[in-house]
Length: 458
Ligand SMILES: *Cc1c(COP(=O)(O)O)cnc(C)c1O
Image (cartoon, rainbow, N blue to C red; front, side, top):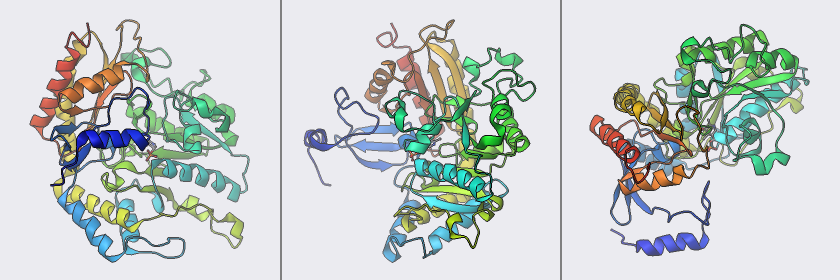
């Protein structure tokens, strides 16, 4: 074992590194991780931490899984990378076949990129050029939902909610049309959940100007695509949808003859209890974005899936209709090989069954927290348990992403051996699917303990 001085590692980090989404002046010391196994991460000091966010939502089969390790090593021994513009290779083809075998019906083409943001950029660019190639260049607007998060590159940021994440960059973003998200706890049309007729979608009577139906009514002929995170909006606050909203969104896109982009970067590969979140409403998008769990958290890889109709619009003797987009590491064989092995594990181990068990344990355990005075809402979907904290249950007031509660909770959980990273006042638990019932119960006990700690919530 290579023993490194932990103080040394932290101070070397402090000397030169710059971490994502981290205020470097006030952050606590970074946690030096030396090893991962299953749901656990091990620190240099020998502490064991349960990975309660799947390492930023990417891990599904646990850390350092022997099958995935072997797939990666085996691929490295034969071909690590090759240009994909004019070469091809088995891992890319195998993965495309396997993805299309499980993806919603009608998706027949796979375009690879490097991460979730690029998978979204590709989707937006495909949608725009699709209409140009079809002779309808006036279809150039995107409709995105409030509370959306689609990534940190310029196009993906433009489609994301205007927020503390995007505000310094507003001058470089393009305008998108925004429509209501079905955030039931803070219903955009002011209904009680029991009387919900998904009026926030406006499908029946598009009178509210901020519904998707109204926005399509107003901008229909100029809309290239509607982009959504189906069933679970992630970084924008872990908002769980009624499935009728997703079904209605597909119907509206059909009615207004526009494309539906499903950003399943977070929801793909079982996270919501189905292989893809679109399945909850039996919806097939025109374009689907995948990343995060695509490689089970091993390698950066993005995939944008689309239909033959979109693909066909790019076929031409006229070379200007080519999709001029690519990345150095497009279809990286190491990433594709580990992604194929991950899909093998889904079949061999009934991983979707594991997610459904996890969903049940979360329901049983977290529902009891609803009565706590700081708990505004509890939301559960698949392998994600969410607790929205408020300072006043009647007014539902809360601090949002910059709420100091976030870092304080992170520290309290860390002291208990649990790695969580709340989005401000939104606490969520999203572990690798291989977590056991007793480990889940232990996590729920830690959450209860922290929420009932008078030092945290006087
Ligand atoms: C994380 C995320 C992205 C961005 O993916 P990166 O790999 O971080 O660039 C895009 N869309 C959704 C829904 C995400 O959760």
